[in-house]
Each structure stands twice: as C-alpha cells, then as structure tokens.
Length: 483
Image (cartoon, rainbow, N blue to C red):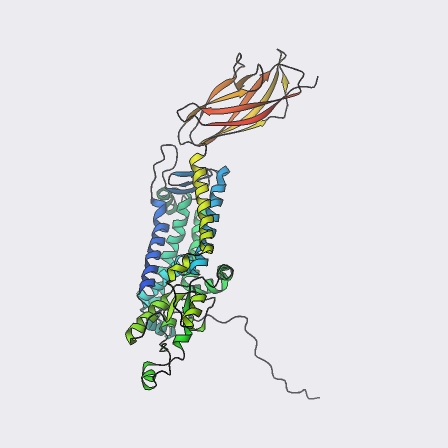
C-alpha cells in the first residue's frame, strides 16, 4: 500500500541566532557624556580599593573595605557592624528608589550610561575599534576567512579582553581584604582559595558577557527592561523618532526632485549604525533600546549636514510628542523633570538618606547585651546571700581601647564582681578594660540578700570612663529560690 505524499515542515527554531553588532564611531553630546561616565565609573571601581584612610592603629587603613573575617564594613569615616546591617539595607533601598526616580524621569538612562554591563561592553567595543578598525573594517574582518592575519588579530583582541576581565575580577576581591597585601599574596600563591575562585568566575563572566554576549544580556537576560515599563508614563523622557516629521523617507536627491513629497529622514541608517544593540529606533519603542541616545548624535549630525532641523530623533515624552505632532508649542525637556511623581521619589529617597545620616550621627559607640546563665539559675552562698551569674557582651565600637564602668541599680544591698576574682564588699560597680573595635565577653557575678521575693527586676548600665561617656542600659531579673 502506497503511503500518501507528506510534506515535512522545517523544524521551528526556538530562538534567533545572534547577529553581530558593530557600532560605528560617533561624536556628539551624548557620546561625550558616555565617555565621561565610563571613565569615572571605571576609575572608581579600579582605584577605590587602593585609597587609604587613617582610622588609627587598631583598624584597617583601607578607605572602602568589606572585612568579612571581622564582620565589619568600612566606608571612609563610617564603620558598620553586623548589628547595624540596617544601614546597608537603607543604602540598597536608596539605590532602588533612586533607580525608580531616574527611570520615571528619563527612562532607561541607567541602562544607557551607568549599568556595569553597558560600561564594560562600551569598553570592549573601543577595544574592537582599536584592533580591527571602525564598523566597516570589523564587518569585513568578520566575514573574512580564518587566515593567519585574522587569527593573530583575534588572539590579540581576545588577549586584551582577557586582561580587562582579569583585572575586573582582581579589583573586586580587593574590596574584601587589604589591597596591597592581597596582591602580594595572590601572586605568590598565598591567597585563600576563594580569592582565586572569585577572580576566575568574574574573569570568565566579564570576558563572555562583555566580549561576546553584549546586547544579548540586555535583551534576553536582564529583567530590568521588563520592570521599567511599570515605572514609566506618558511624561517620562524617551529617545523617540518623530515619524510624523521623518516619513515618508527619501534621499536628498529624491527630495530635490519631488519637493514636499518626503519627510526629513533621508534613510541614511546612521541611527542604526551607531546603536550598540543594533536596533532601528525608527521602528518605535522596543526592549533593545537602552536610551544611550547615540542615535540622536548621529541623526543631528546628518540633519546639520543636509541643512534640515535637528531633533528628528530626540529626547521627548509621549505627551510632548503628540503635542509637537499636532503643531503645538512644546516646553523644554528639562521641565518634565519638575513633576509630582519625580518629587515624590526624590522626597522618599532624601528622607531615607537624612534618616540614616541622623542615625549615624547619634548612634552610641558602646553597646551592652546581657544574658542570665541558667545552669544553675542561682547559687546560695555560705553567707546566706543568693548569687546569680550573667554573661555580658560589651561592644566597643571605637578604634581604641576603652575603660568602662559596669554598674547595677534597683537591687538592694547587691554587689557585683567579675568572674575570676573574689567577691568585694558592698561594691555596686566595677571597671573593665575593653580592647579596641571588638566585642568583649565578661562573666559577672551578682549577689543579693535572700528575701521573700522570688524575682527582682534591676538595671545594669555600662558607661565609658572618658570625655564622651557613652552609656547603654539593659533591664534584667535576679532570681531567688521559692520560700
């Protein structure tokens, strides 16, 4: 039996193969802004671990340091302890609110200028131009067969990629240890395994993401473009192609032959050629647009060369675009920043920052935490008095040794003494020397006469014996046997 002819459909592709993007060199206002932000961002990242900050002889002298071993975070004159993690949380919240504010005001400006993926991709693209030349030369090199010349150029370029990626990973670990010491230990093989592993992972990710994936990270991997849509509205500035002015497209020669038949866009594709993600802004808003505005620089240059008004591609809001399309007067772009939504974000951001500054300025540098020892709960002394044992943790947050006085109040005829010493006569306080920048653990004995009360509440206070005299108090219970 003959089977009927069956036509098999070609297998559907799950994703489109990547098309190499080779942005063309451009100069202009936004390109110079990107240069400035890239230089500042890279300088801050690579140089910060090497900045010294004198905090005295008992603490590290690195300006910015995440000291995981001692559970400290140093940022210039600020020292954050583990129990003060809310400061770190506050900074993260400020970063989030600031990002929301920027997005609501100027769209994806973070993506276009300051995102690490954008900064390192931009750096790697400059390496491409340095090694292979500008756009046309790079495109020819991509299509060329693998000759000795192409192989040598590729190896040289990838070597630069690897060098940048390696120092990117190396700079990161310097934030977690003293930078000069770590560099010596790293190259002499004495650094911890985690240091080599971290550098290896960050080198690989920087090399791959910045050198080869580039715009794919923005379009397919990053969730931020999807989230931003909820923060933008019709008054958010966006890079926009004014199709009512540019369409229909036609070359300069066609426009000269048919006056009034074509728009201002001469279909030169310069906006596409300079785009780092390879999109065509003339197709409207799309997820691949990171709002870097290089297409504005390219279009303005072309419009100037052909004697047409600039701003065919421009930073405008949806409302202003509609108003301009209708022939109405449009206010300057900066006025769109002065609106309630932006002010609300700024007010929240500023309130968090001021609250953190106030808390930092008023925090005590001495902290007391006391725990009653439960085994045994109490001990009856030969004198008939009852003794309770407590473990006090006293946090000295100064970068110098400090003498403190521990006192008790609210417990009649009680005496206090430190573990390892004998019981004093009628002493309601004692002095303890605390090391610099540490949590001291002190065993304390408190004795009081036996009374009918099964439990008494009292207070223990620690106070610095210096000009600052910071204090901290904790309410405790003194346990006795039942009568």
